[in-house]
Amino acid sequence: MDLRGLSPAPVTAFTKDGKLDIEANRRVAKWLASIDGVKSLVILGHAGEGTFLSEAERLEMIRLYADAVDGSIPIITGIVGEGTQVAADEARKCKDAGATGALVYPNHGWLRFGFQKGAPQDRYKAIWESSGLQCILFQYPDNTKTSYDLDTQLDIAAQEGVVATKNGVRNMKRWYIEIPALKEANPDLQVLSCHDEWLLPTMFDVDGLLVGYGNVAPELLVKLIAAGKAQDYPSARKIFEQLLPITRSVYHRGSHMEGTVALKIALMGRGVLDHATVREPLKPLGKDAEAEIIAALKASGIDRVDEKLLASL
Image (tube, rainbow, N blue to C red; front, side):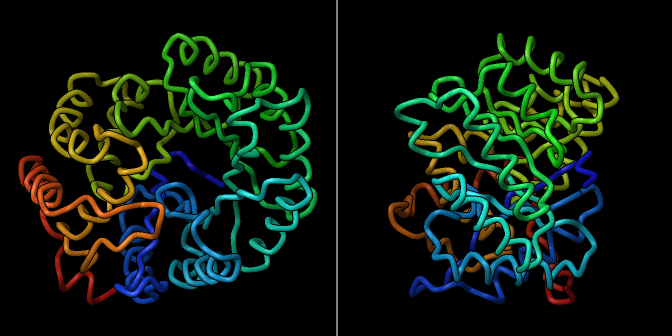
């Protein structure tokens, strides 16, 4: 997979009574896939409420997205099963449903207790061998026990089937040491930042972005990536500052989980979604937050998506 650009992590749209909204999800998929510079769509992750869906719903979403993009870009799915064999079985079903890649989540028991040496490597190996899905190494924040040490990252990155890393370490001391080490050891490894709430410091070291933020302002994020690759700090800074009202209203909230709800509100503001229905344990943010997010879009100069364009997709 060529992920050297923007890989949005789309939200999952629901009807007001909580079921999958097939048409709204198809509209999101087609709109994002139509944007020049979007290299893949990464569904069923945190932004997509992937762990809040049943297995049948998850597979339905993969089939829907694969059909919507019709082979134009890869569909990458979050793999979240707890046990290694469970995750491998999940990956095989996802491949059969139409996925090309896997964003491999850690076993979430590790968040509390940490991981045993070699267990993450075995998880990636089992997923690749079971499914043939091209894998993305997912580096969690430094303040969690699932943030892999450099040796573990190097081992995983060197494995067959691992084509990229989504790095969200959120510790720039580690970033400035570990990213160069990963690149030196694996020159073909594609490095993707997922630091939605503070993208600018990471923009000059990456091949692309894999971000929920890609739902809301994909046009500007494509330009931000181009500025970063050109090492054009003034242009990158200008785009970053243009986006800052949205960044603050979506990601500078009490909990990063609220970002998913905020993304749906922002998509309402852009005319892509009609409402911001989420699933428990997520909660609505309320009318004041809605007004704040819509105002942030206007302050950043982000317009509604053309209705004729959406209707034509």
